[in-house]
Structure formats: C-alpha cells, structure tokens
Image (cartoon, rainbow, N blue to C red; front, side, top):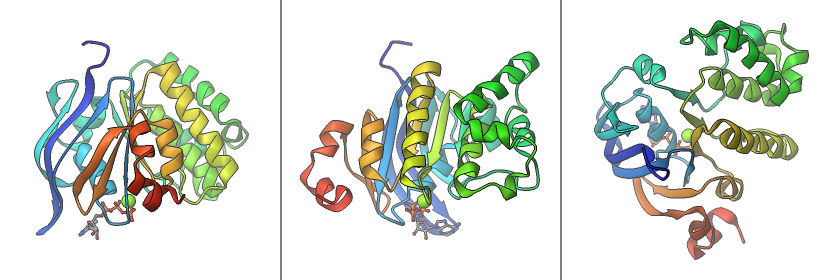
Length: 240
Ligand SMILES: Nc1ncnc2c1ncn2[C@@H]1O[C@H](COP(=O)(O)OP(=O)(O)OP(=O)(O)O)[C@@H](O)[C@H]1O
Ligand SMILES: [Mg+2]
C-alpha cells in the first residue's frame, strides 16, 4: 500500500432505520495513518455513519477497509478486522471494573504478554485509570468513563478508531488532554481515526481531512485547513 493510500474508502453509502432513510449516498475516505472528521448539525447522520462503518445499521453502497469490502459483514467480523468503535454516550461495561473493561477490549487478541504491557500503556496515557483500576466503571466520573471507553477501544489494537463525540460533556481541560492523547496515539501507533465532533474547532485542529454532513448528504469536503477557512463553516460551526 502506498504512503497516501486510503485505509477506509466509502462510496455511495446509504443507511436507514426501518423505512427511515438517513444517509443518501455519501462518499468519504480516511487515509492510512490519517484522521478524518465528520462535522454536522444534530441529526445530520454522523452517528449513523459510524454505525454503518461497523455494521450496526442497514446500508447500501461500498465500504472498503484496506481494499476489502466490509459492508454487509457482521459487526463481530468488522471488529476482528481491526475497527474499534467508541460510541456516543461512552460505551463501557458499567458493572465491570476498569481493568476488566480493558481485558474485554482485548478479547480478540491472542498475544497475552503484549496485552499485559498494553494495560500499562493505557495507564500511562490515563493515570487516573491506574488509580481506579479496581473500581467499577459505573462509579467513574463522566470524563474518566470517556478515558476508559477510549482505552477499551485501543486495547483491540485497532487499525481504525471510530470516535463519536468524545468531547461530549467533558470539561475543557479534560477535552484538551484527551485530544492531545489522540494525536499521540495517532502518531506513535499509526492508528487511523474517524472522528465525529460537535466541537468543530478542535476536530479541525486534529484532523487532516473533513466532511460536512447536512441531512445525510456531504455538502462540503476537503483538507481540514480548507474547511476551517470556509466562510459558511466559520459562521455556522466555528462561531466567529
Ligand atoms: N434507531 C433509530 N431509528 C429511527 N431513526 C433513527 C434512529 N437513530 C437515528 N435516527 C434518525 O436518524 C437521523 C440521524 O441521526 P444520527 O444519530 O446519525 O445524527 P447525528 O448527526 O449523530 O446527530 P447528533 O449530533 O444529535 O448526535 C436523525 O433524524 C435520527 O432521528
Ligand atoms: Mg450523534
């Protein structure tokens, strides 16, 4: 694969819940080692797009991971192919401890010694989780649960990390910290990311490419820099 090849390639993606059509033929890419962000108002279809990539909603169109079709596959198979999802509203197992959540995240992996080392890596990224390793996830603060949800997803050793509004409900300083860790993980481990965010300014700083979704259609796309300087994006999403 060449250096600027796409890890994820989506073409003509439609998605629907029952008879309600939500995505109307969208195209987007995530570069190998890159970070793509999808921006859009409430109800635009951002969460649905991530669900479509991991096989959680009925779709039509092509979704390719490293050149292989994954559309129509079961979520379980897509996970095994290296796609980890941090859903909106977190996604930790509330009745399990922090460390049990990390172990669950690694369930597809056979390299047990490396898994042990990766617990340590996660605790180094998020020292609060180390202090709370025996604590039930349900008793963590919102920010700590988000850290755990991200760590659990990383324990899969994914090729592609799907992040659904990771900044939601977090204090600005925690958000800053979390996004710095995303950058570090992207650079150190080469994990590609597809990031959905309400915080457009932050997302456009982290991402290399961006897509603007309006009621299930891509209305604008380009490098993060070009989207950031777009007049209408500035007014509607960046607020200056
Ligand atoms: N399970 C469902 N059944 C029926 N309609 C749904 C379902 N989930 C989402 N929708 C509808 O699909 C549309 C897109 O929803 P989606 O959650 O993808 O939006 P979003 O861009 O993530 O919005 P937000 O920024 O509020 O999270 C909305 O109109 C929503 O009502
Ligand atoms: Mg959403």
